[in-house]
Length: 120
Length: 120
Image (cartoon, rainbow over the protein chains, first blue to last red):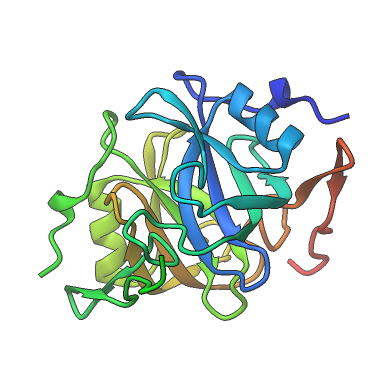
């Protein structure tokens, strides 16, 4: 049995979670979970983070409709980071881009490598 | 010009960095950088983290030979997380597995989905 209590949450009770598109392998975002958001994610299959700024549960897509369905959760060797393989509806980023990692460092400058989606 | 001071380091002066295999898209590991390790990484092209446990710079592969060559650094929308596209020599994980994320949660239990490499 998997016991979430065996994970190493930080001193705020949080663990970082990387969301990766299960089909394309694209890294979409990094956000944080506490034990309860992790349990909700496993129970419902809908990825639920803990918003550090709002101090509230954040079920991805609740307001935007850009839901993340959990395909598989993985744990790293130190048990202090999660990798979520997800089925992402629409853009993952609040800027309406597919991924939050749309800025690349190239030749010492910042380059935007991804445009916002024109679909809602 | 890219100015690392515009990134949002946490209260310990650290930022999480996800290493992804530039060729296969596999997520290899997550570790932490401070401003100086980030500067060294960009200067040398060899990924250098900050080890929170050893409180020291950690040039990946220095002792193991399993070097990470930086292909491209990306920044997320909140500027508080890095994505490193890397060329990884050998296994990224200290357990000698290609990726640190070798444990999957399936049917409520933990499953090891990746064997250690038999090559040194």
